Length: 240
Image (cartoon, rainbow, N blue to C red):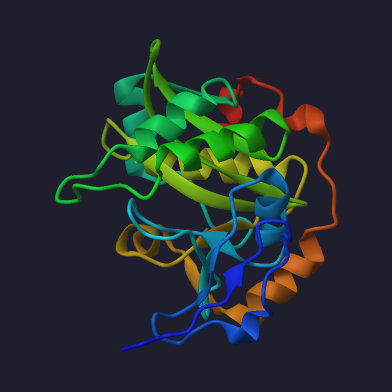
């Protein structure tokens, strides 16, 4: 099947209107452009994200259904609390962003490739240095055993990827993220697309239009920069 995709201008960071996104494959909106900070911020502020594999052109997506965690929907159940005690876990924010992205980029079991290519890692590291991208880390003693990273647009955290080297470490990182957000915002987390892991955690699927409405409500609300200062996260946040 032949499809037509608009090709982005290297000197123009704007995107086509979302109603131009394809239905098959769902949400594919445009190709080309670059991963500059200005383009990425404009993309996330418009409900768009990049997603492509090695050898593919740069592809931009806005799917018809989005996966989100509303405020107060992520909590530590009995099993996760046991895991924290069993493995003696502790948590931090923005202390190992580059390491988190590298671990997220590592191919999964039965998944030989990765979409978090070196240029993607570098682009998000630049966003991190500019205060737009953040990481949550899960530690066992001095070893990084889990974590996630994403982009903060106003008061909406747009999650990108996560990893774990211990059972449930990624789940715990998600809970810690929402608890950390709640100190300065409502706690909304965008996870882009639903999958079995997120559904197990209770993620909600909403239409694109509803997501864009939520994004418009949250993207101009500010969060104090000091909230994302690199450091440990108080244990009582994880215990909430």
